[in-house]
Amino acid sequence: MTPTAGAGTGPLTPGFTERYRVIQSRDRRFDGQFVTAVRSTRIYCRPSCPARTPLEQNVTFYATSAAAHEAGYRACKRCLPEAAPGSPMWDVRSDVAARAMRLIADGVVDREGVPGLASRLGYSSRHLTRVLAAELGAGPLALARAHRAHTARALLVGTDLSSADVAFSSGFSSIRQFTETIGEVFGMPPSALRARRPSSAHGEASAGEIDLALPVRGPIDTVGLFGWMRAHAIPGVEAGDDRSFSRVVRLPGGPVWFEVRLADDGRLRLRARLSALADLGTLISRVRRLFDLDADPLAVDEALAQHPELAPAVAAIPGVRVPGAVDPDEMLLRAMIGQQISVASARTMQGRLAAELGESVDIGPAPSILFPPPAVIAERGLEVLRGPAARMRAIVEAAAALADGSLTLGPGDDRVEQRERLLAMRGIGPWTADYVRMRVLGDPDVLLPGDVAGEQDVGIAEHTHAHVV
Image 1: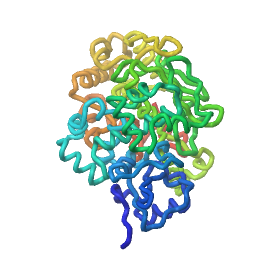
Image 2: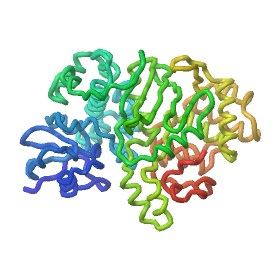
Image 3: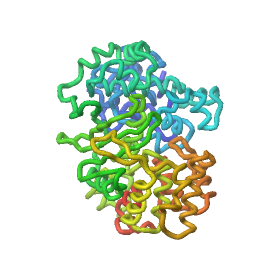
Image 4: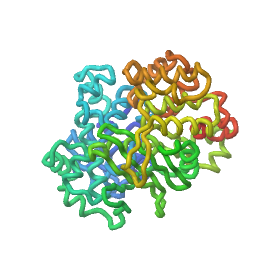
């Protein structure tokens, strides 16, 4: 009998034959995009696992590690599939499964349960569970559990946090649940998993900080990425240089300071100080989206290089990323403030808004300012904002809609519905709606016609638009 691919194979994912060729070649670019489960050993691996390639008749492929867990497999101790970057499919795809995966990574199930996740997606809990089980091989609880295990592994091998702190930072409700899950997923207790970490795993964190390596598929244009972040940084809120970017942001548990930096060994690292350790999983997910770390740069560059006009720029600057957003509401308001003015002018106005209406916090190495929430901008924005009266009113009206919930934005939005909601607002046109869709949802199929920086550098404009306001 011909083996078949596991749950998750669809029109946008390769079939069994293609995936088997990938594991034969140990192609690292597919790590995180699916896992290989071997029936003879009851172990699942990442595609690049150095172990001997299993026989075809013993292999089942799953789109997620959660599906492999549900089928009774445990993670390979040699290749640690939970340490791979996330799948780019959740940005490329726009179906319910992809939207659910983005929200699960953001911690929605941990904070609101399956009913909260289902409500955000517009389904009943029962129907959503059926959809995810059919598409991904696991329901929302199992997918959230796998995400918690992924975060816990990173903390166990990358920090000196106690097991209790690791458990609650990862979203587990008890140490017992944490210990049982780690044992089931990795086939060893947390203490044994921590003992396997390399001596180089220790970061440079100070007391009260967390310092972690961020898995990423190469190549990555860190020069362009950090340069873009630095050029758009709001004074007092964000700061950046050639090798790092830092800022403060408000998460469900309170203010958070984080810094992403390029370490001397060439890896990206995340350093953070949190008000509540339970926000760590959400922070990691949002930082990964901000820096587009789950992208498949080789696939992107290959597609773009097929266009003669783009090929030279792709060859010169491989691995360009699309900056995302850590706060969708803030992203919309910043985009509206920056309409039809220069980057420098937008930064000046955003900095003034933060200085006068933002909250000062001392959670980072130096005092910083939280970008003001929509409710504050709705109430007092006209006192601070400068420019055409119609545009200022539109910004304040958008802030009021975000504050009262009549307008919602998030990584789980349907692309078409989000665009329609934004276009229904006064002062939001197609350019702004598409820009927000690109930044908040990671939608790769956005073209911003008339963008000045894009016209100056057509080599990256079609895919990344990395130099727009």
